[in-house]
Image (cartoon, rainbow, N blue to C red; front, side, top):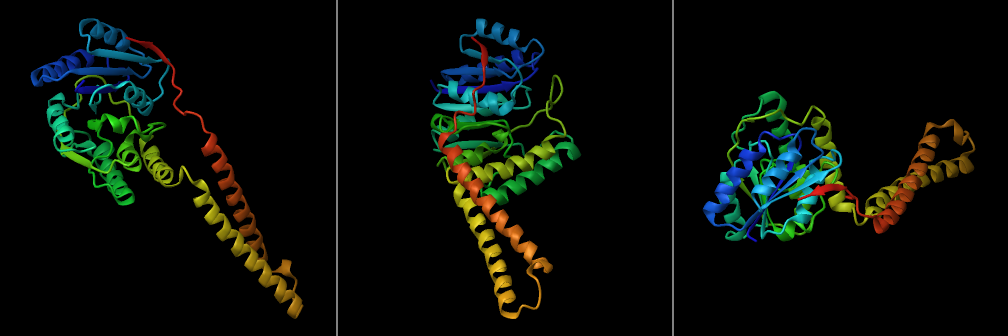
Length: 311
């Protein structure tokens, strides 16, 4: 199969028929063998009934439904596992991502040899204060901290080699930083394509103000995980040893000074309590690293999402 199109959705009943027809028109026009995988992330409207209807009309449409809302990352992860196409393309279900971009993305993967291509909504039609400026700041920060030269990490329109999506695990809110996960998995040829951004035609946005808090936290998480998930002792252990040695040196100095001069009590000096504090912190960090090593070696799959229905 040439193409798998993974579409995570939540309460997008009105846009699904138009989106499916648009994708079908593009795919048939290019002669692709394709599948459309719609993952219903616990919608409360008639989205699942619409997916069932579209699947009955078009055998290339597949649908999966969660029992409750798990989030976009969970929906993408399930879609990635189900994808059978040589190229996997993700897009949002709100019609703000144009299916007309599919041939260009497909060409960059199959002909130009990119492992992954991220869309860049260079001209955004979102509100400036609530989306555009925060997005620019987060993308600038992500570029500086990860070394990946992308302008729009969170663009829903992306293309991947099948081997990429089978090699990464998207969980929590990590869909914003899939390029970082791909690079960490060893896929270093990551490209970018300017794509058209369209105004939302139906419904309302599903992302609130909490993304301003989750964005930076997710970035710190993915950077830490990408560097230390398989070797947490390298991080916690190093800092633990440093703090422990600092505390030990401070207490040794105070003890020698007490024995040599006997002019003051150790407990009368603030430095004594600082030495005790660093000694305790060092021990705790070292133990944390040890426990993290045990957890990382025995962790089960974190994506045990229940797919309630499938067509």
